[in-house]
Image (cartoon, rainbow, N blue to C red; front, side, top):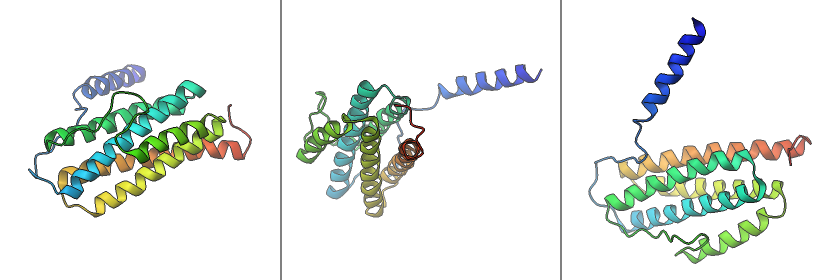
Length: 182
């Protein structure tokens, strides 16, 4: 009976998860400042950078941490894209992998993929670098706005980045104690 209850619970959670939206739309503010627009554009490119670097690392190292985080980064990009659409802001997303409107992101992509190619440990360090950058930028963006739409998405992204940082830190700790699976 206990197994049947557990299976039924898992089934219900699975069914209910089908109704969870992939994009967050909140109808509060109808306009945003130029600084808020610039912040959204920057975050769209940062999420693209994270997704593409982690895709590269997953292909290079075939490690489960990158596979797990990739799914989350894809959703994060969709959240920001939803806000760009809502506020009628041109999406800077370039379909070509490794190509960015922002020259700094272009440079970072090249540097981070080169560094992460050296070893699995370096790949985890690259992940930590990306998440640290995201957290710092999100903290600044959240401090600079009162827009509930932006705050909700930025808070979601920030929580995700903190979770990703913990995952990369755990992997790096495994190297320190000699338990890393290379």
